[in-house]
Length: 281
Image (cartoon, rainbow, N blue to C red; front, top):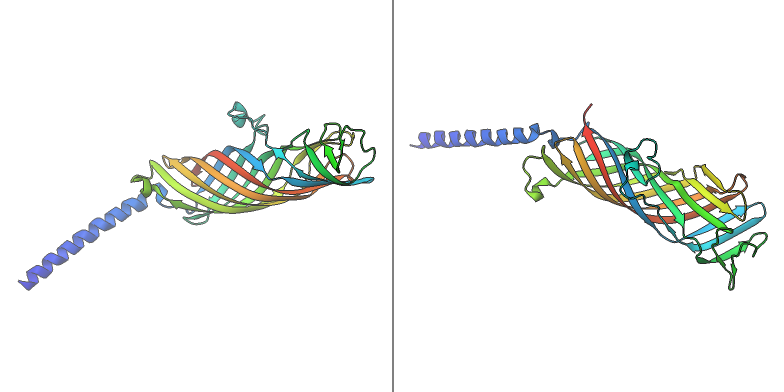
């Protein structure tokens, strides 16, 4: 009796192991089960907010700081320009090209094309000096100035270009939503950090000088992000992200003269919606 029982138990064990192995093989056969070696490309748009910032302007005959200036972004809204090759730099955009170094981690390079516009006609504190004070309709009591257009216009609108590399983790959380076939639809959680440099095109008119609008490497930035990725039919996805970071620009060009410059640092918060594709070569 004992040999028959042992034989029966062995058959049950072999059958169970075989079924389990087949199920594991089915999971591993799915394209979405493994990421290592895959490339992905992302294109989307953003909205951002900025912390207050002290901005210092320096030149041959002036050196002054405007305290706690406020700025806003310059959204385009849903528009054909996001996919128009001739006008892609007009809206606020995000581009990334990435590679999975293993199933959970990726490295990317990309550009966060943000826009930064100083609020005009606001009252701010000022320290320092500059020539012809009071001739721009700006002087107020108690060491304050009004940010008139004759005194100062200041924006990074083509744009506040944060060129960076990111290192991110990706986790498949499809089971939370009871999704079995991830090759049809897959839900991923992603988080990461980035570091890069700022290459803004700063549009400035300062103290009645000629307007200046040119690209210049101005500083550096760091950032953290978290997002949700939904992949459809193995290769196409939509992704939402929240990203926050710090920007420090000690060398901003403000006029045609190399003697004139500005410096500032601030925090930013970015909301991103992007579309992309993932594939193997």
